[in-house]
Length: 406
Image (cartoon, rainbow, N blue to C red; front, side, top):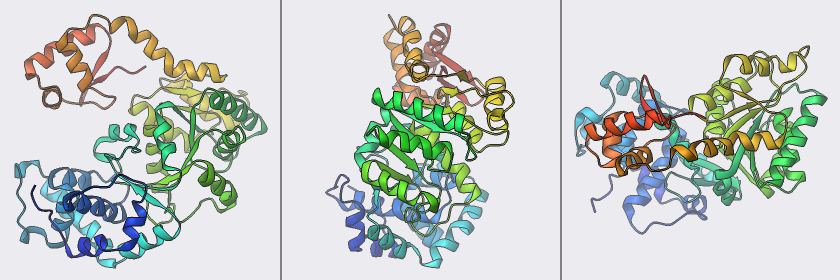
């Protein structure tokens, strides 16, 4: 195997005793190549802001360790590339390097890793058994790693999960509906995911804990900072019984940008998103829009037409491909109903159609990408997609083909 591309910082990180604590419950690797990539992902998660497309593309070409080495010494490092054209645009790289280098030179990475170990955090990366598979649909905006406090295995139960989000300034009506919906979902063994904010988010977590169900809180700031501070006791309970997750290492405060980026994780890691209450400009609408873009089902609970707290919900029902839901049974139908409608169309697929369908996901992919994934010739892929389109199993978008939305 090719020897890993190390950097001075990476060597230092790999020698930290804190790193072994951060990976204690994750799979171990028996070669330096994987160890270097794991450590590099920890570094990258502290160097870049959430959703940085250019960094993700660079890592996709050079690998986490190679990309970190490039960041430190640039063109002076010799790195074998399959094709230089695979790298991001040079102008994007120059701009990205100016962003990332400032944090790299600040020298906070080691302190952040040690702080994470002190609060009992652990790091999971793509390829780990507990990595939420839905995050892969974020493509070049997927996180490099997740920082977790609590029971990592809760992440494995995201295959049956619902995001419950809503207004911070919730009403008694919204909180009561949330409690009833979550209780019904937990009774059907669904994991409840939310953002731990005041209002609907907090009620969703409390209701799940009250019924001894699985719940995951996704934060916008560092893993050492339980935010909001007024929910410190609630978040400690979630750590004890579920998991608190973020893509931000210690030391990072929750900002408006990071809240908006956090919402994409909530939408991506769950099977469906349900908005209970939302004002006209509620942040919950951002989570709903991410769900729609990812092809996830979106459920919306209606409210009184006179209530400003439900104005955003009614807006979603009018403007987005959303479904009105009022009971936990209707939320389950939101997910399971699509599989039922698909069943007839999935019968008697040809081998080529099946291979093309298996290569698709909720994220749009080009015919070339699908040919690589399926091992088929591009013309055969195009033919199979046409037949799948007739069956209404796929849809074409401006950026490529994907599975048809529910």
